[in-house]
Length: 334
Image (cartoon, rainbow, N blue to C red; front, top):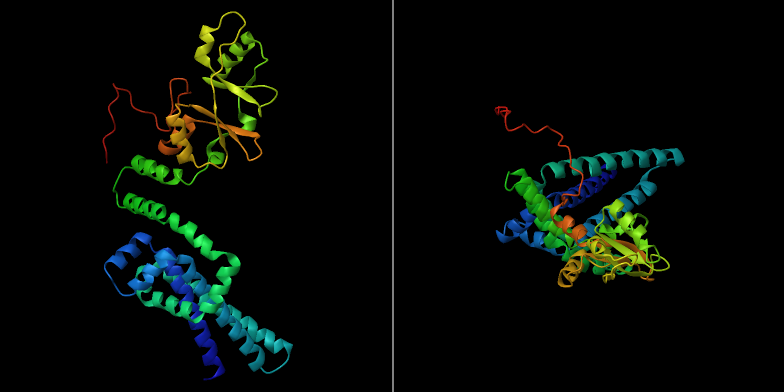
């Protein structure tokens, strides 16, 4: 085999591996599952990808790296001449590799992923078999096996999100309904840290504040539940409900209601059920050291599921497009 033929072969191998990895990342997981269920060509490899996606993609990356290394070594030893000749050969090969081995295969694979997968996906199995020792070493050093287990937990959620997006594109389901379902799917992946009101934005009052001043500030704040603290916000004593102020006698505050405490890393879905079971509407969120980092309300958690919840105390939102009055006829549809 001539030198030029060998370099063309290396570029071809890189192009195939790149196209295979790009195609398998571009196609829908729903489509891959359908492919496996119908036992089409390459279904076994598709099933393997659904189980361990990082393993096959790592095999493709390893194959590309090894082929480029071999080609670079060959150029360094085969090219005759001085430093300038070697540099010219390496630059030309790098440009050809970038264009024909990376950019073009990726563009083609994204455009025709479903057509190319039956042909290219088995190539990933070959790469996995050839580079198995290197893959095992890389997985051991990077902890890839542990990540595979965590990624598997999100497979069903990701598949459902893809199904929702495909359904929306095909006109199946209203946009609001799909948004709510997506909120439910993503809700289980969020922690209280992501939905809480941070400490700097928390409206709270000291228990040493005179009752009349507390009533005035609560009325101005328009919050119905206010955390009450001792020396600092790290020492929350309880919660004052605005309606309790109606029962206030003289300059004595009504009894404080207990609050729920939670850590900022707690999953939202778990804590939502905790608040519902405990009939709690406000919780103080702490970090691992016990310092208060924010508060979260039952309304905050519900809004993560169904979107913005507005009541009679919220400012009305002006619609972007003025709505017609009852007397004004609607414009006919085109």
